[in-house]
Image (cartoon, rainbow, N blue to C red; front, side):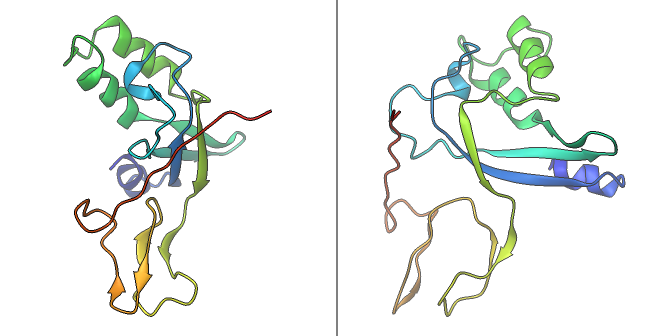
Length: 149
């Protein structure tokens, strides 16, 4: 939503599709992994383009996530944790994730199906057509992350 609003106001903006890969170093339980399972840790981040600075991270969605999910839950906007998240996530990222694309209307190689609106989740296609990657009863996958080196 932020990207759409920024663009409507004439500010270049884009989504960055990502994967959380580690716990939060800032202590936000809702913004990091609690284990090596990252299957449901696929955020969409936002960036705006500012002349003289380039692409600048802004993340109102994760600030809202902190307000809704940090213990004890449903924190008011003025709560210290929410204010800390807002200050931290405007102009910088918490570096516990990797961005993997910002593409829209993606045509998958060798696919017979139409383009996908955004490439955020795993995709699969068989001779019967494209699987619904958002239907956990028919499309299952696991993403596991591990530190190496």
